[in-house]
Amino acid sequence: MTKQKNDKKPVNERPLKNETNFAGNPLSDKIGNSLKRMYDDVVNQPVPDDFLKLLIEADKKQG
Image 1 (tube, rainbow, N blue to C red):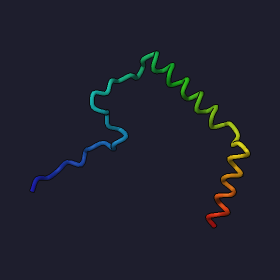
Image 2: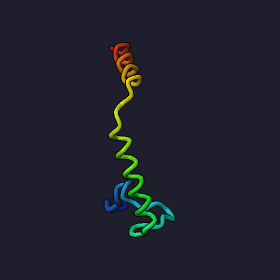
Image 3: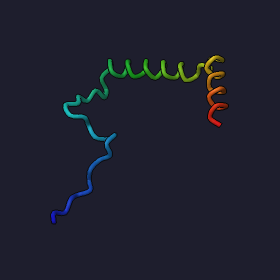
Image 4: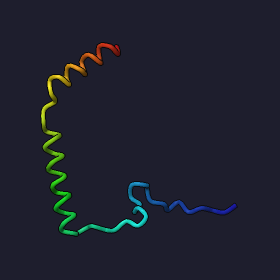
């Protein structure tokens, strides 16, 4: 029986095949910062009343 090494990195830490390292690339940094700002803006927006009503109705139907 062959002994296997258990030195594999978790899936989220392994580089993808043919992946190019963009760390430190000014364009990638700019895109990343823009995406972070957009995400923060979306996360901080209030949930629309119509959507909240739909969620309440769904909860009532479930239980």
